[in-house]
Image (cartoon, rainbow, N blue to C red; front, top):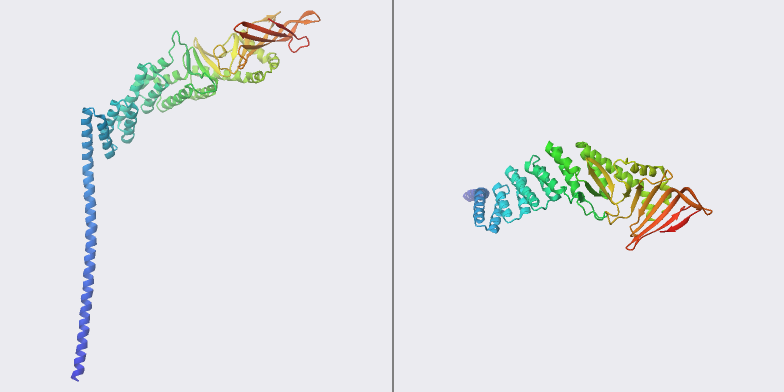
Length: 451
């Protein structure tokens, strides 16, 4: 009995021991987890503190470093060490790309080295990023200084005008830019004893766009855009001035005529002006003339001069002829021998009236052929002659003339006056001029004579 009790007691003791061990193990595991959590929290908190400290340090040091870079740059400028100054201002802008002082200083350094284009770019970038009005004013000053230099060097061009427009696009009321626009006009289109013709829109070879017309048209569009945004009487005057060039002659290559007409219509819709209206009428009449003679050019180039017999007998051609004889040709200027060219035209400004004409062979060497309307009074027994000439491009010194006239035709040995065609081939060389004339050309009594 006592043994049984003793065994039971030992079993209970063993159970209590095992429970205590299990409890200790559980508590140990909880302590380990607690320590692990504490370490994680401390690590996270530590990292956050470090990041915060770094942010504070960087935040505090950037302005300091910026100030140091700017100070160093200024000392380099005093020593005229522009390369080192440029480097310091560059570092300043890396630290703060909205530093007005850094942009201004970098611009000064570049300008001191006469790197004007780079100076303009950096100060303009500074204005874009900061919208600082002083930087904008500095940019405008640099651009206008370039324009003034070109004018003073007697090197004024459309590029000079372009610089003024650049400024007006940013500051439409800039008085200096407006003043220089007027100065540029006076220099570009000044009439002198030896210079009465504007050649800016003239291509020596009309098939090659080598003149300044495209740049000129772009300038007109830009000036108009500035005016539409901020209209003023001064800018209106400048717009009209540049649109209709006030010179005795303005030569325009024909490929540009349609473009010029288009931009004039656009400007006229905003700024109606009698001179623009008159110029548009000239351009329209010139284009109408081109269209009228297009078929003749085509046939003459093929050597089909017989086409002229049909043309000069037409009432429309004789009407053109009579308008010149009666000095009533409207916007088309000319008298006696009036050239028609597919390559070049001239706007004439005389006594406040704008007219047009075409360049003849004496004024233009690269023509693809010149047609001449004879607008002279040549009456035969009271009947007016109708005459046209053609100078082909590929036959130097040769001119073909077709006449419809009332003249003698030899019939059965007797001369009989009647309407007939005459075809002359005139060849001019260094030795002189010879002409082969075909009377009653195309008729049954055709004859030839050389002189």
